[in-house]
Image (tube, rainbow, N blue to C red; front, side, top):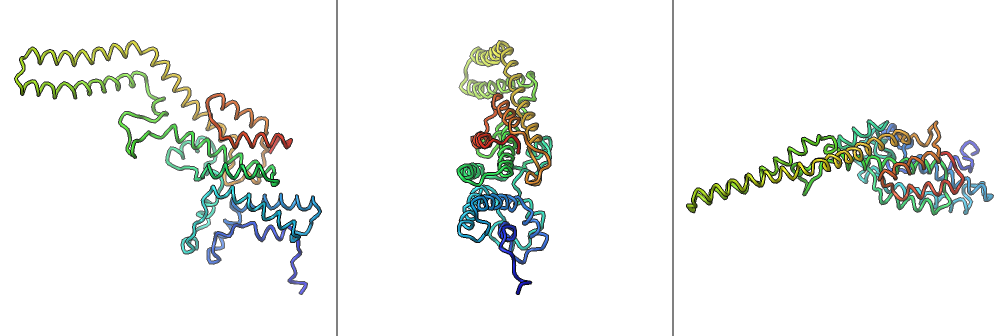
Length: 337
């Protein structure tokens, strides 16, 4: 019987319950291995390890002691509140059985897939979004900050997720062309494209619109005037009024030219500079494939706060959860993650 006895230790228990158990037994060994190595599993393990440390500090080395079991349940509950913000593998066992290791790893990842900021911008441009419910995630962060299960590796995970969500969402908002009712708006470019356009192009486009409006007003009026038999002098008046409208509009635009040039320059700096800032901070703090769980390079907390505050001064609105995380990390005396 001794050969079959498993020691009542924390490592055996953690190894047995860290995997979320999304996959049916019939799924491939490779898919199960991908699930064991996923971001979901790693985050659950970190919470269980913090629960173990608390239990041992309180004098409960046995993981099956009632107090230890309570801590395990509480830790997994907080982890679940964070993980609810991410997609699972679904509920259809027939579909999950056919999933490849790549599919499992992709669905259970906690980070955006691109390696660096430049690649991130291009992937967002191609329509690859960060699949996260940020509202649920921030609710989970609140539960985490109110719990006893805080640790530096979990801190790093949450910080990385918040930065990934903000940077990809910000870039997406600037490069997407606005729509109304799902249809693109004529001459309503994305902020990025607008910032890249020349002032002459913007001015000529405005004049083209004025010509179209004047034409749309004049031609029906001339036809009606002809049909009702108005004298040629009345028709001439209508024609010259249309020319006057276009002329006055052109003079008005020339008067506004200096201001328009300044506004376009400011837009260019704000939009293109904003994308560049997002690209840089993504590259600095992102780790792909959930590797922040075992990253070899530390993150300086003071430097992170300085970078976040610098971008906030440039009108980047960070999630409140990020500020709360930084405050809590500093209150615990951590200077690196």
